[in-house]
Length: 503
Image 1 (spheres, one colour):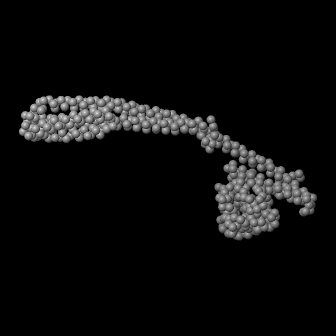
Image 2 (image 1 turned 180 degrees about the horizontal axis):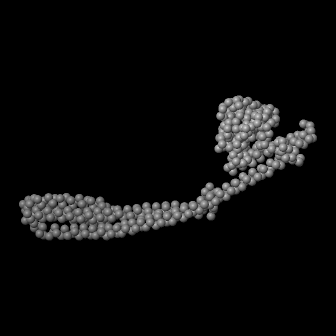
Image 3 (image 1 turned 90 degrees about the vertical axis):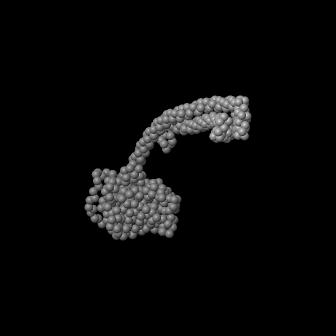
């Protein structure tokens, strides 16, 4: 039996139980409809046969009324007896017509009804003849016809024919009633039996579904644990990799400085390649560490303290220009003082500048503007010229592992830069947005409050308790901020780092 979660479907046994239950519903429904129709047919036949019996009795009663009226008129000569006679003489043929409609299609009943009709016409003719004879003043002659027993003989034959037809209908009625009772019993039995079967199947299916839910929960828990282990393994591996990378970068820099290699020498170019490669690898490792924090639900660690975003921006721009020959332009407005995590804000700005340099038009500048004119919020804008971002990519631009094609076709990152920018903005209680068009290029806007909300601030690794902002000692220049920003990219290059022997 499959034990996967509901995203992989129910187990085969549960599926089978639900399929059987559904089939049972159809079978019970079909059988119930068939039995209901059979019972309805039996009921219709019972009603038909009862109606035939009633019509036969009514026909015989009408004929008797006619004969009684005829006898009374002949014996007394009173006209009042002619009323029941005429009613019976008119009602009997009408009843015969009704019977012909009810018995049409049954040859045996039609033959009996033909005989009954012939006898009824003869009886009615005999009654009519005697009444007319008496009305003409020859009552004795009419009485002699009655005394001849001819009318009694016709009446006996009519009673016999009616009794025969009524007996046949009574027998058919009993059969139809028995069929009606059987159909009713089968209908009730099917409903009750089907209900019991459906109840049992429903309970079994429910138990199977509950078992599948438990299996799915267990598998989901196992997957969550596996995912947690994977994320923690990535974190541990990233920490382990960062040490050798920092050692390689520091060693290559020391070799370059110590040997005073010419700029155009092969050794110098090789050392530069090593430095750039290790620096890029360190950025990837740091991005993986940030991703691990986010995936584990810890959020990005923050160390908010009083600082100046203008100084942070100058440090980041100077670093970018050192690698890209002055392509980054900086404009500052207002004041940049606030309480925020300088390293994280610098990291976000560095990622936005790197994105602009990578995807902007070759040789065109990347413009950075720091707007501190609002007393409550700080805004960073990074704009580059070039083709607009495709419309289908915009909604998922800040999702992890989203990468576009740079103009040189290189893929030097994991596609985490903009995702981390978004999370840094969120961690500071701010937001980031992008606008892109052919006329104005692409512009990213990162906005956050001057003071990080206490609920958003998370202490960085190695700190204890709540981070309390201490008054900062003003230092000229950007060197202090620059060294803090370098913590994210290459801590081994900072003054006072542990000595690493050249590789």
